Amino acid sequence: MSSRTRKRKLQAHVIGALIAFAIAVTTIVPLIIINIQVINRGYNALDIARMHHEERMLEAIKVTYNETYKTINITNIGGITVRIIRIWIKNNTGLYILDASHILNDVELTPGESTTNKPSKPIPEPELIGVETSRANIFYYSP
Image (cartoon, rainbow, N blue to C red; front, side):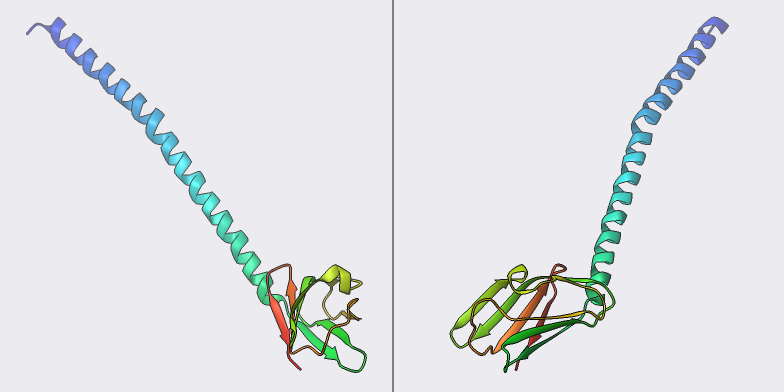
């Protein structure tokens, strides 16, 4: 084999190796970058879910019912602001689901704050009162 043929073979091998390297870099590196981005998005979603769960655990309210005045008293005894969205009242005639904005003057209670309001509709003596928050917690009162 002549030296010219060897040089061309060597040149062909080098060019082939460069092409293979270019293909590997243009396909594998973007796949690695995409995988890293997907993993980061997953971690971000987990952080959001963890924060939501931690906030739910900090929510605590105390619900009482005054039979004399037919009023519902709600006190935020937790560590964060609570937004009340719904009040459930069950009694011997059925279940009443009341939108909190129709019952309460303030639907957001800061820690330590309380509100007492009378429902706009007359309700027979409740067997169970449930107060639902925006974080999907439900707190109950049973006389």
